[in-house]
Image (cartoon, rainbow, N blue to C red; front, side, top):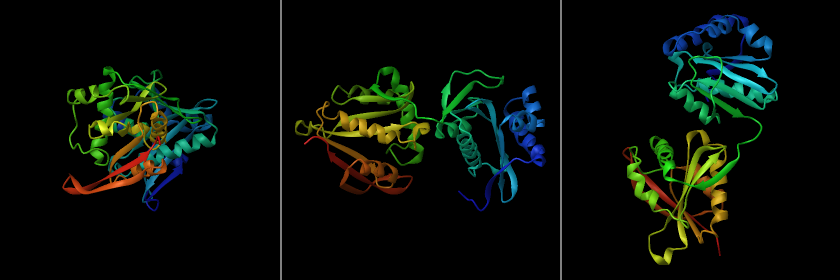
Length: 322
């Protein structure tokens, strides 16, 4: 992050006009000011700071650019609220820096969780919250405009389980798959795919070539697919594995857990050798497999073209069952 130009500082009394201005601007742009907004924005000391909360201000090249508040709810619980970045400073990851500062402060205060209220209209903000680890929970709360509530567990990750996918899961599977396409790191597809186009692929899975849903506390956050290699009988004990995670689940070690679980199940699935097909510029995925003991077995140079750039494909492999 550009630490020389971006700084996160604690709120001071003279920041109140900016705290109100930033929030009022975006609220009135998408919704309407509610009485609770007016009261909190005009008197943040009494409603937030004096009750055990915190307010952060972001500066960009010493100019105030955004804000966020961490409001005390009850022992161990804080509300992430009143985040706003002035429009001309958006796109500089200021919101992410503010959010991370608030999360770190909550951890230091011994919080067990952070909640937030938002709206499905705010797709960019929701994407950020999910990447930070927030999960959707049943909605309630003081805001008429909020139709979504989220929670971040600071004590321990959610319970992970794996189950066979059903046809009802296919739209979610496709949604997660499509979320990887814009990054040009994971798949060779360059346009989003439809549920209908994945029907045959879904049906090709079986008891020994399963398609698993990765669930975290009942939220479908990813999937794991086993597919036969080359389609000839002599290769029946060799399979290709694919792991796809929702943006909210990336960077939290779930890929490592899913790969480890898959490797443990290989014997029962009659799989002796696992393969992974990974773009050579996808260093994060290559690192994941290398740390699990996979080795580079082949390099196919410049076999793909993504946005006019030649890309190579690495085949990694590991003998699971001797």
